[in-house]
Length: 229
Image 1 (tube, one colour):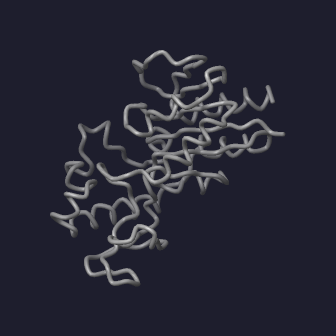
Image 2: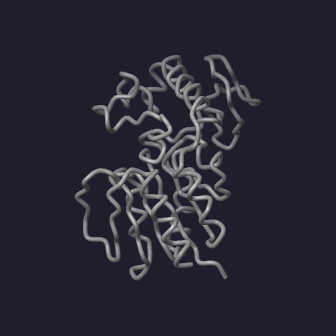
Image 3: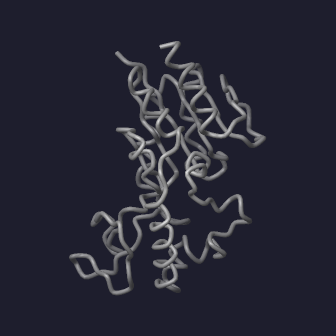
């Protein structure tokens, strides 16, 4: 039976593909306050602004490609059962070949009803005010905004709990509820954190830190784990 690896990823793994992050730019996305474009209150105030913001991000995503870190994670599937739990809303893990991906914060290439979160459609173009679902409600990005519930968090807790190895890539581990996931891992399992920044973290048992950007750090760790498998 293959050992189970759970990989938690954040903005750092996508940044090298050209996906912009907001935490490295003073809390602004494209010069917008996060509260204006990533909250139910912002959506209620100005749907046109929110839709255009995500339309721009969707167009940008379609021009980006997976990087070496995404492809390296696929190699782990040769020897391990791998689940990726990502805070990112892009599809770069899927395009990199990963077969089991849990999106905690939604998916940019999907849209959903603003009244029924279970009515979800694929979306590769723009969403406009007036675009409606089959039940007649305005379509919105399939994104979990600040202040909204995270529907996939229980699935994520389950795979972290079952993991034989835990890998954290490119996330500050400060955004909850995702930040709390590492606390569900077994005490004794190996844990790896890959990030180029110096991070002040609480004591986490059996944690090793690889102080590199994702493309370098993931490639190194994958080679190590495949050798040990």
